Image (cartoon, rainbow, N blue to C red; front, side, top):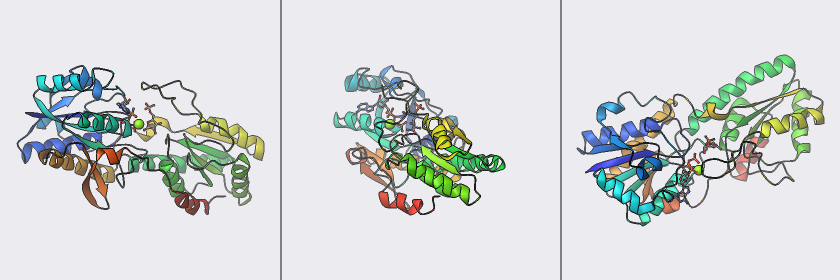
Length: 340
Ligand SMILES: Nc1ncnc2c1ncn2[C@@H]1O[C@H](COP(=O)(O)OP(=O)(O)OP(=O)(O)O)[C@@H](O)[C@H]1O
Ligand SMILES: O=P(O)(O)OC[C@H]1O[C@](O)(CO)[C@@H](O)[C@@H]1O
Ligand SMILES: [Mg+2]
């Protein structure tokens, strides 16, 4: 019998390293074989699968994207557990490794509750899963964002401008917080902390008074104090949620009007998810892949691999998807001492 592997939700640097780690340990140590499932749950409900041989995962640890493809398909809309069981049986799969974020892992938890043999692997650049200390992809996204902010700062300085940089982070501000801290931003705006335009203006003017080109880093999910919702100008995603984006575009003219400083803005968008993972993410992702095979062999169904300090552990999927890991207020306040 084979182990099926799928990647679902937004892609994330390190997905291929997970696949490689799982396939190498599974074939070499446990004499197991694998089926690749194309485009997440879509491939499972539509029976779009292929034999995933060891040679197919050669050299994958540094490769961005996912060789399996991904989607935001809901397995419960394509037949649910019945259909999943049927396709698994047809492809001789006795177990599944589902690599994804909180949505994918919620679907995995529901399938596990129905008796399907699933083990989860957490992925998200947002780092918002509470049951693991870190997710792979986050370090890469922070590195790309930091380098971009450093570059934007030099052009802003040359023109004595203010620069507003939008990073990803739908519900949480971890990327903004870390990239902002790393690049010495003068203001960091995150979904967890509603901030007034007056406060932002004060930070920007303070930085300018010290002779700096003010840099404001904003997470896409940030909501100005007094407003109701995050800026979403791009319709809905495949799961029917608003696609966020555009908060920097909205804030830049407001800051320019309030401060009189010429202001430009940049949304980093999918650059943060593309390309090669950092060494840290390659290592973490590989260890997650290896850990997932250990969990399959131990028949720890309904669990997810997680980073606990420096160790790979398993936690129940129910605990894993219960709450989002938001930025604690104390972490934000610690960073805010450096603003302005
Ligand atoms: N409660 C649920 N029950 C069943 N399926 C779900 C549930 N929540 C989400 N899903 C399915 O899982 C898919 C993946 O979830 P989602 O699109 O949120 O990506 P994710 O895995 O959370 O990764 P990302 O970090 O990109 O959000 C969803 O598009 C949806 O089809
Ligand atoms: O690639 P898509 O579907 O536009 O999704 C973007 C979302 O995915 C993430 O990159 C990861 O969840 C979020 O930060 C962002 O809001
Ligand atoms: Mg999600």
